[in-house]
Length: 321
Length: 318
Image (tube, rainbow over all chains, first blue to last red):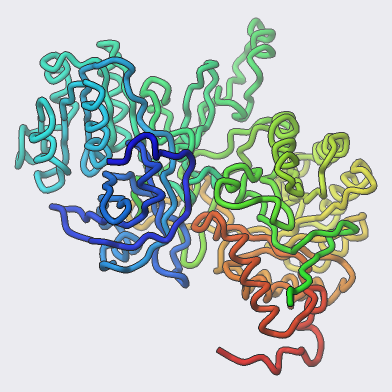
């Protein structure tokens, strides 16, 4: 475990040597030697990898949340991924001593509570990958950690054993009932919140799951820190592809980049129902005006309210294809 | 022996020809974490508009063979925020700022040129004319010589006399030389080419277009031969007009290819999404390739491929 003394700010671009690639149930785990990234890592952050080699026809970086870092070999970084397409297939075929272009750690980490709290960590599929290093940090601060993990089937619940071993409680749900109780994590959320006396929720997984968790938690006034999965091209804040509507502290909705403004957002700040659209009142939306001007015209508002643009195809996961 | 890499952006001398391509580097700040932006020939900013703009809905990108489609829709905070925040930051880092501007009307382009001229420190203006003309049924300025000319003439008239104005051309035209000539006659000090090509991807699982905006701009190495062709044709017709070449540059050799076709500067775009410090690598590789060919001055090889016999015949093939 890297001490805070060594931690430095800002991402780096390095050549990382593959230490191992192995199957973890339905997923792959990859460990890379990348000391500078390990030293800077905070839970919730991610790395990007170039895939396919120097003449690759796959130009875009693949983003992966960091599962954990370890001090071995000067500092290693571990990711978990599913094979979705040619890029992740190529990654799964890497072997020890292969060298990859790695950039990280990227994005805003999970904020930690100032005082000891009961923390519920919710993960969907391999979205749970970043939750275990977060749990370590939370326990260092005297927090209780409870896990609620779910997936389609038992082999796709990532980290069930670790959760049972390290969490105060661990609740597992699967859609086919092959592990834990049958259903979705959101089916168990009420019960877990009550039993664990949850103060704060950390969640990572598909957008619909994050939306439902935020809505349920709002009833109990429990803050949610949600790590989103949006399609990214660069991961460093320049390509503007990974945006989603986020309400700022000034009350204005902006199309925020999940790579640099996130991936962790406060649940209630994300306009989940409008992900994939430009809300009509978003900063710079067609017909958008500064509030001062809008207020002045409020009395004469007619029927010309611009509509939000239609939602396109479903958002793609950030975990590459 | 170091190669003389100096390049001329209009009357302005740059230490080297490598720049970021507009829309692939923000206003430099994010990439400064990975490289010294003052070491670039220039930072070409993401296109700035008069007002804040939210852009298009997501999904905004799709990976394609050796390329990508993007349909960002010029999301940005507008000229006020740019002048307040981004330009001063670039200048404080010692970077040369080539500001890309975009608008929906000729007047908007002119106003932007005026605002940039009032601010100190703008090295050059690159006019992104691949925008729909809201006063002409949304027809893209860059696809019509008259509309292109009108924008460039208005920008040239409002831009301070010592700020070079470059017109960025679209390859999606029948005769790029005609557009290039119209822009130069309207007062452009140089030309940037090429912008992206309009493309589309359909998801065979959902059976719907992959991008929420339906169509997007194709970029990346897939379009490099189109860039080489456009630069070649325009340099052939207008040999004295400086060209910033861009389109699929991934290595120093790719940059050299555009230079041989007639570009005197080269912008690096899509590959930045995979390699945030790609510009510095490409600059280093370009210098190595020039050295390997016994070239002493970059300027000596600009457009060299147009000569009957290039000096490359004695270069070893690897």
